[in-house]
Structures are given as structure tokens and as C-alpha cells.
Amino acid sequence: ARPDLADPEAIAQALPGPGLVALFVALFLGGYFLYAAVYSALGAMCSSEEEAQQAQFPVVLLLMAPILFLMPIMQDPQAPFSVVMSMVPFFSPVLLYARAGAGSIPLWLLGASLSVLYLSVWGMAWVAGRIYRVGILLQGKRPTVPELWRWVKEA
Image (tube, rainbow, N blue to C red):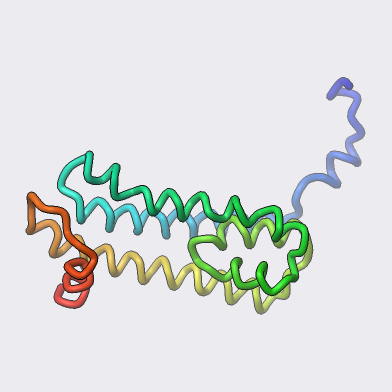
């Protein structure tokens, strides 16, 4: 089929409305800043590029995990599993938008999920700052999880 012969009304119906566009922007910015804070913390605790590449594997898993849940959530966007998974801040930038596109979401749930996402951005940025404050002073060895926890408490 030729694209110049496509029905403009069918194209207009397929485009997202202003509400979905605003939701996309809010989720994109929240997800971007959340993962930026996570990668900042990761960079602060690594002293070489090789260490950073090895340490980023769990973060990449967090980025890929929502893709595994995407089909079941789109098939039943109101299921308890869908609601819970869209409240997890690391998953909500992908899953909440998929739920909104597949069906309607109550406004209170949308607000709650966005609030949790943006509070998580603030919390992760705070933790990254604490890790950076202590981690920048140490060089040569990679910290363990208990050491990271101590850095967050002490700094």
C-alpha cells in the first residue's frame, strides 16, 4: 500500500492523545533521572572502566526486566500483578505507559506511581551523592555491599 493514500482519519486515531504524550514525558524524565542516579552511584564506586562494565550488569537486568513483563501486563492491565509491577520505580517508566496505552488507569494510581518514581529519583540521587563523597576518597579496590551501606550511613 502507498503511504500517500492512507486515510488521515485512521492515522489520527492511531496517534496518542495529549494525556498519553504528557504521561510519556513524565515517565521518560523520571526513568532517565532514576537510571542516571543509579549509574552515578555505580561510577562513584568503580575505579576503572573494566570494573564499571562488570558492575553495570545488574542495572542492565533492571532495564531489561520490564520487557519480560510487558505482554502479560498489556493483556490484563488491571490485574493485581500489573498494578504492583507498575508501582516498582525501576519498572514503572515502561510498564505504566504500557498499561495506560492498553486501558485506563485510575488517576490516584497514576499519581501514586509517579510519586514513587520521583521520590525514588530523589532517594537514589541522595544515595549516589553519599557513595560519591566517600568513594572518591578511596582508590584501588572495589567496595563490597556492606562497605557501600557503611558509606551511605557515614557520609
